[in-house]
Image 1 (cartoon, one colour):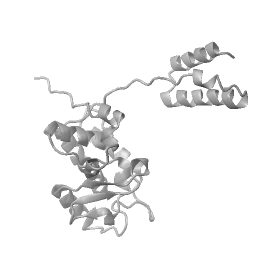
Image 2 (cartoon, rainbow, N blue to C red):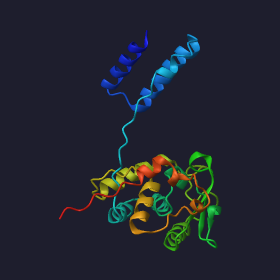
Image 3 (cartoon, rainbow, N blue to C red):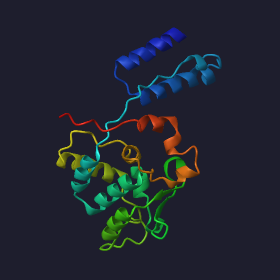
Image 4 (tube, rainbow, N blue to C red):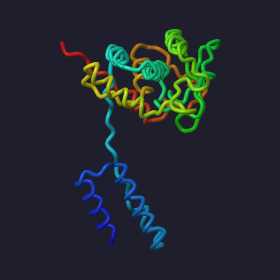
Length: 226
């Protein structure tokens, strides 16, 4: 099978509606086959990966975020999603928060082993601190801020399920699936507010400085048509 056959195979996979991730995995397998199994080192670099289309997400506006958060049925899920939005966290970072990660003296949250296994510090707003204190009083979780079953934090899939149910209950037509970091960053930039990630002042290669994130934060909520 020559290079033209490989390209024809890639075109066939795309025509069948294969996902971009699966297509990249297939290309990796073919490159491995030629480079390692057939010992033809000059072939793999000529088998190109697919060029994924770059699409801007539809970000909900501030009013829609409020409606969404008010529609979350569970107090724990509501507090976790509110924390994710207010502090600009990924869902996995929100569920992994511990009670000791809250520094109310310095008004910051310590994010340990966040995206890319990196630690960072984000700002803790007074309103978010009030929300967390209201949530924490009745159960008083000893270790995890949002505990799940056993000695584990709440499952991230629980937050995704809460997102789906809250989106439907709030009557939102926009799909609330973009990372909360992108939504928070977009709202902060729109209102001229500093990003909650205080590590930006000392980390030139942080989340918001990478090209992909700059592309994502160009998105704005769709203007209302009068």
